[in-house]
Length: 268
Image (cartoon, rainbow, N blue to C red):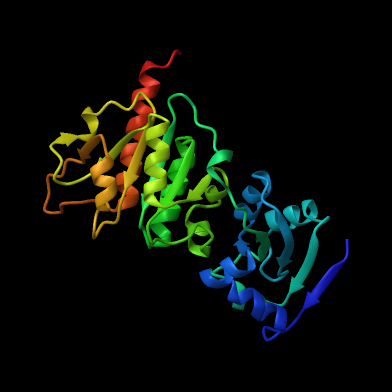
């Protein structure tokens, strides 16, 4: 197991990796960074192609050392604390990071069950919210997640961190809204939109068939094309002063309601 060493935070290669924090650089290079033992492990389990593993002994914990042995067939780079801190997105890094290739997915690669559950995230910009939704999507076993609008990308470091690596567990695809609407309609998937102005509570909607839960931004709500395309519009009951919940909370409520209804009729 050969190990390359980088001691300086000013090293040219470290500067190159730092650029991958920016979406434009990620798109141009087709690469992204995965930080954290749990996140790297989940990427590995999901079949993500890892190119290199960077580690920093002063920060490395026991689980990181074990994982490092599993990754011994990859190129390993030992970096100094200063260099790792420059690369890290965290206040308390665990000393492990991987460079990975962005996988280009297509609709043809996605397989939907007869009663498919799909999450559509439209225009969300906050990586923390996107990551939290992806974590919930993994927990309820959605068939696929689609991103539409001018939101963040799934390879944003904070999306990966807040999803705790769940970003790698589901098929995720960014599409134009019109193309995705046509695809879902063609597959007879019911589109369910959330809106504070809807008269029907989300508790009273039927989610037993193929269903897409569509979530928009807290500030602007859903884009007009999604709202018009939705066969069902539901609201989350609010009894206090606030008229809406955080989008990640709203998404969790709806996705777990789908799971509750389906488990209620599933054979024991």
